[in-house]
Image (tube, rainbow, N blue to C red; front, top):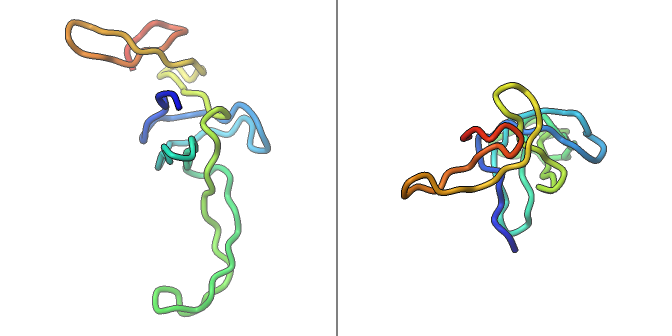
Length: 103
């Protein structure tokens, strides 16, 4: 398993699948499954029983995970790019392959 190049807090765009073209912020990365949960993308409906937290119960919408290969990082200019790593001095930094700027 290779290193995941998308981190929590990154702004990403979905490049494949049912939600192609949608953009959002990464809330959580599931390293063992190679998936990420993106805010406002891939919403699924979950039926819940009444409980102490939700006395009504009912149908709740929540975000489901998307495979990392279907996501592409967005730069500050709003264009998609691949991510690379390089050494600057004694630090390892992520950079945009398209514009060669540090992320």
